[in-house]
Length: 349
Image (cartoon, rainbow, N blue to C red; front, side, top):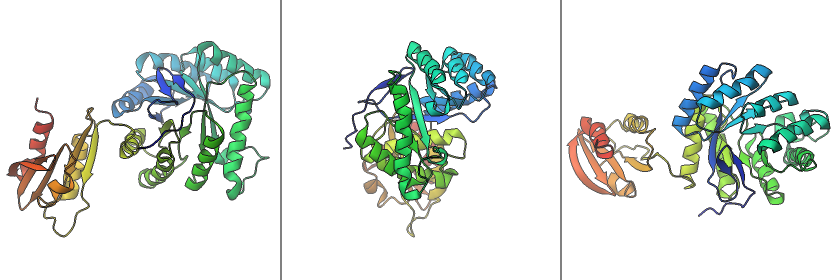
């Protein structure tokens, strides 16, 4: 059982972050925020995939103002991503953003930061301080072995700016593209602060490499009870980020939702096209809402036993298919009918 670190609790548009709250899954739109229709369409698709908080870029006033119409049409909280121009943060807040992602240090003058903080206070809107290893202040060390400490120092500088303005609705991220650097930074920070943490390996890469890096970095921290919300940063359709986030949480028994697939790695005993069978099952039931563990095994001899903890499973050999529940075979049918029969067993209506 993973014992989660107790952090401060904040609320982002109705989603609780930190404390005893469940770990939430986030993503970020890759649409032009000014294109309201396209952005709403993508958020709806991400919501259907399980995204619980969405972030959009607000690079100019038109994008910040678009948040007003976007918010009217979506069901999940929205975070505005702000850089440099404090006025964009204020416009985003006025137009309904549920939280901000910014670094107060790059906003400029204290009076500008104070204006943003006052607007956030008025609507009780949290601010995420997002530190990236690749964009640290010039006076901090950029030596690889010193990067974790530099990331933490940068975060503390930004935190103090907000704390000095009597603002503590803060969430922190300490990202790096290098996994050991990212893990070290989060672990050290978690030991000295109780602000809630947003986990991520930044610029993780494309689907395959990015999933591995993110799983190693985010997963290792979650195992130690560190982390309150996650985003899997991939050079890919953001829907894949959401699916990946859920798979990591389900693998660690931190959340239960939808499909959990068990499938064997194939061997010389396998006489069926197990790879495509497993992929078909995964695709067929990927959007199922209720928690369900399905096993797809390569032979009827070991299949039921190896997957005895699955809710339901299938296996096959020599043109025959088998349906089993909790390790017990309940039906023997032609192999080509397996998927159809499985669907009827899971969704009888």
